[in-house]
Length: 390
Ligand code: APR
Ligand code: PHB
Image 1 (cartoon, rainbow, N blue to C red):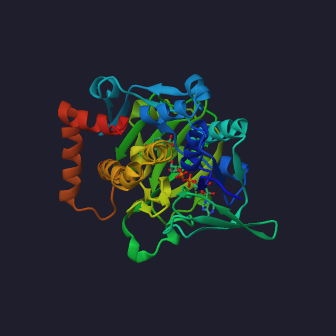
Image 2 (cartoon, rainbow, N blue to C red):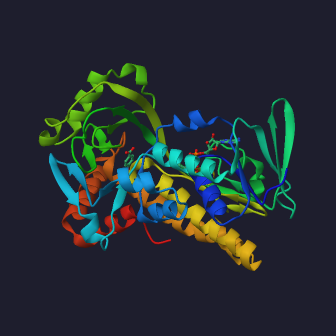
Image 3 (cartoon, protein in one colour):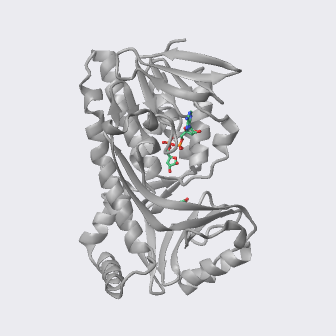
């Protein structure tokens, strides 16, 4: 079998790249180690920057997003019992974000891909990128007790943090950077109206809390928890009580509870692998970098990586120029590191760190005070939250 671009991973990165290539008439094939329903069963955040929305439009996969997505012009920071609204639209030059579940975005891209007749091989075992340091790379995989080979021009490693692509690169060819945070997020989903029409990020002595949503009838809530916390120890009642404790009174009283239908704990880490290109293999999305969810940047960084990679591939196939693919890693990493910084900063000012010193706690409080009383400081927050330019 042969294709122009072999894409490993059918998450948002792989699907968006595949759809853009298909729309541009560039043959591609996606392989994933699991099945479609498993992928759609994942619960992930969905705060989309305008650049991400635009790319989904270019991929002709935005109709449900535009009809069901929730445009957000701002969000609130809550601390010391009060709300402080960050006016994204006013501070970030009329930009806003769109709240739309990543699962729905993935479903839209999958549906569009099937409509276009582009090929995806699910439940592909032991997917292995080969000879990507030569001009004739290929990918092997196992399925139906047979080893298959796909010859290609390029391989896009869109297989996430635990994927095979980054691991196929020799350690001496790559430098990684990592920071693991000393807490996690316990999150629930419940069919109940969100406590507010906008997101609320709360910093409370008991810990961080986030009030988010998937729709006007489906809420997504998180509370910071120790890394050794067990989901089984958290009944719904315990969760709701702890969430209320961490919110200002007027929000705590307004929380409408309902049985959770999803409850999980996620660790928080920052991770970057450099470079993001190895010969004919390109890493994109979580395969190359991870951010704590505080800044809602994970999905949006996957989108900007795909934008840069797609642009380079188009240049190669249209103008036979390798300038774009040669520049991919530097361009992508420049935006990645600024989003990694923002996500780290937002995590640092909104969470309570175990064994933090009294001095560091006072610094955090001063940071929040400055942030919510300085137009310059809140403008910097707003322009990062809506997404820096590509
Ligand atoms: N072989 C084939 N497929 C693999 C392999 C492998 N060895 N390892 C992982 N995969 C697949 C996974 O099954 C998954 O469907 O690659 C896909 C990776 O998808 P994501 O982990 O969602 O990564 P990405 O597409 O980059 O999307 C990043 O997802 O995790 C969130 O917060 C993150 O919003 C961000 C977005
Ligand atoms: C979510 O809705 O899951 C969500 C929203 C914003 C974040 C993180 C998660 O910063």
